[in-house]
Amino acid sequence: MNRVTVKEGLHPRNRYRNGYDFAKLSAAFPALAPFVTKNAHGNESVDYADPRAVKALNQALLLRGSGLESWDIPPGSLCPPIPGRSDYIHHLADLLSGGDRTAVPRGKAVRILDIGTGASCIYPLIGASEYGWRFVGTEIDLASHAWASQLVAANPSVTPLIDCRLQTAPAQCFSGVVQPGEIFDAVMCNPPFHASAAEAAAGTRRKVRNLSGRKAEPVLNFGGKDGELWCPGGELGFIRRMISQSTKLATECLWFTSLVSRSEHLPRFQQFLRDVRASGIRTIGMSQGNKQSRILAWSFLSPAEHLEWRRRWTSPSGR
Ligand code: SAH
Image 1 (cartoon, rainbow, N blue to C red):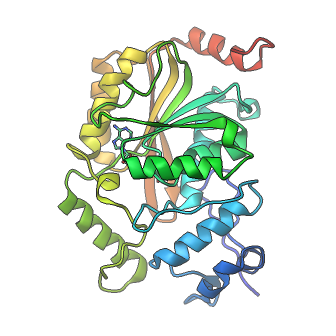
Image 2 (image 1 turned 90 degrees about the vertical axis):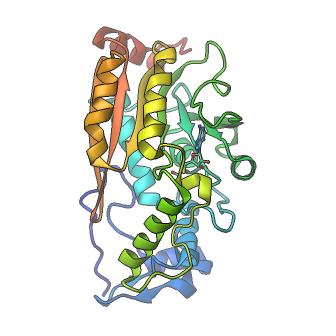
């Protein structure tokens, strides 16, 4: 019998916490079947170092039970691990609830801005299908933006909830994509974390080695085109720009958040945030397998303003 491993580190509402039933997934999505093999422990699994296997698993996970009808990524693009991306959405839901997990806001009164949505449009697709939230997904890469827009159109259950916008100024996070007077309950972002193409390539080689235990191959496991993985200044530069630019939208957004992949960057971000007088600063830990990550969250609003803001989701007039 197949042993299913509970992924303790995942959020309690994460639907992938109890592991996968590969037999059921393959039955529902036959294209996955050729990639399912027995791992060293005798359990069914896929080779996570094979990008085709990871893509087929993602398709099976996203299309089974989520109401989504179509998902794919262009060759060479970042192939997001779905359980980890889902975790960010669930922790964001908790953050919005003000700490009361029984009061997680659902429905289209909630508006999220996803900076750098990628070709996969993964956060909007998960957030809209899990919670019914509305999303604006921005992207600087024209081809990724076009792909994400097509994915949204190909999934009628979430089409009215997701708006993909092209950012034409790579150094900007909000200007040019946020319209005057537009309000967001939260900003989310998985920033490009390397500072150069060479650093990104070395990181990918390391990841392939860790996953497969093999010598690095020229294949990219989770993929990632140049611009997806790096930007001037890397993660430090990107989030620093985001923090500085967020001050202009201090009263238009309840929570600003970003993934931070390197924990050693946190003290510097916390200092930047104090410098711009952010009032609420939080770090939310996430763990997927042996990988630790965290969400940095900040706000410029007072506790009383937070309370007032949260009332809007339930008030009959909404917004
Ligand atoms: N959200 C996706 C993709 C993350 S990769 C995921 O989690 O898998 C980071 C993305 O940010 C890339 O697609 C890159 O093109 C985009 N990007 C970089 N700078 C940006 C900016 N200033 N505004 C919007 N998108 C940006």
